[in-house]
Length: 107
Length: 231
Image (cartoon, rainbow over all chains, first blue to last red):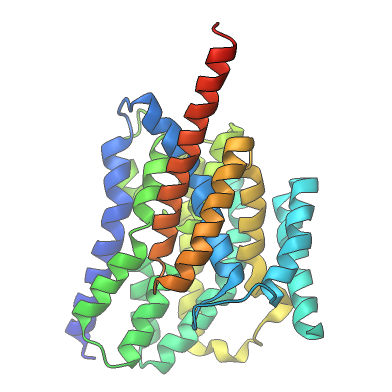
């Protein structure tokens, strides 16, 4: 790909990525949103996090097949329990990495 | 303020490093030079979309299909920015919001919402999280483009840093029955969606449906509570 073409590509990608990030922040901040909408928005983070994690742990991304038993999902169980117990983000990240690393070697 | 931001952002950075390096290596193999890689990371700043773009480029795709795909893949940020807007300072200037919006990613969104919930967090600290992780992303992708293949793959489970971080942030979000219910619905729908729908549109669909279901349950419980105790 030639240079100007590449510039157009990354500019285009940048614009279509930036707009969905920017519009809600500009339109919704500083506005009095209806109570029900705020309550609904408050449930969005837990929903997004859960969707991201479950999709990543239990479905192999390339072939789109269910895969409940893999290194990622097996490491997730003790990691999740540790997070519930300690509520420590740093500890959870380090433990998760070590477990994953160990499982990769064993399995 | 900057220190708080750094402290909150380090797990993101730890996770971005191996992904960024891997992206750099792939992009270089697809024929991009390090400054072109850096330019894409700087302008787009969205991991999965960039991976897809590079694989489409190596497949000989022209610009337009890649841009459309990028738009679809990154549409989920619409929901994240909406949820974040509730927490952003009411007297923030449009310029601040414009800069802030640039750094909204899955990871910074997850970290910042958790911190906002805890209190003792503000728009400025959230911006530091966004920008710090952005800097690490851009640098690691460029580094990968210069020869990331010399870094051993899978060193110390770094590939799992972001998954572990998301697991802990999910725990932070489980603050009652309604939240747990929403998480289960969303997770279940995400698994089904990830199998049935190509790409990552399943994240948007599962989140919208689950949040709405969670809200309905909340209303239902509230109605029940009101009928028992009319105070």
